[in-house]
Image (cartoon, rainbow, N blue to C red; front, side):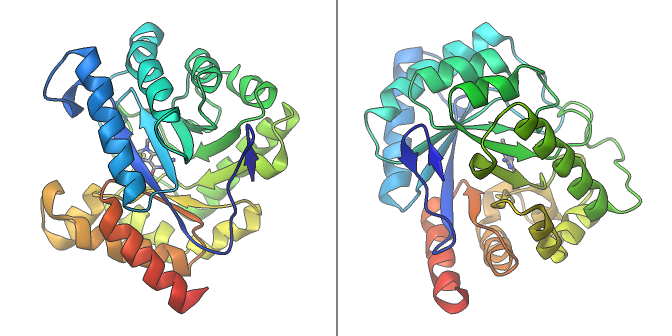
Length: 274
Ligand code: 9MG
């Protein structure tokens, strides 16, 4: 997969995407300069631990989170993207559903856009990604982060998520996003109960029918806490178990907070499975 001149080779190994949140609650100090320095240091350490992609996000998508303005999101992510692009040699993804943030992020050196609305959040997103020849992650969400965990319901969670992603693929390709630059993601935890998340993972191979690389993000999510009875700070082993499972059921990329542990788990699973 070629994204703005940088190549991501899929199939031979699992890629680990490290999460870099640049939201106010992710830093102890509010000063922007310090934020950038801390973000670069965190990105460098994730790359040293084996991450081959870094996902930078300036708006929280946790359950109950409220949107931020375009200007605020730009102020959070653009200086960080500029600094990280010069500091590490991996693909930079930006977690945004706003086309103006995407445009400026890609112009600042990012390679792909992680759109948690799968193109339903901003009608101009697909054409920005197409024009900039960027990669595009289409993630399924039911509702919005503010409302998504208020009793989500499906008749057939896998069938509905698959159909929704297929529609988004068609929207992307109709806007001239290159077919080989699209990645899909069922959106674990986004408008899903713990049972829905487990069913999506159990039936993950069904997403092969979309014929796109598959990204899975389970890191520290609440369904792991539900199964293990553990708080968010103690979910690294539970996350690694889901990473290994996802790899053996079709995942090409895993999005995680704890890069070192999950790179080891992924490498071992690759040796056994691929
Ligand atoms: C931003 N974000 C939080 N969780 C995510 C997930 O599971 N997938 C993707 N693509 N992005 C996510």
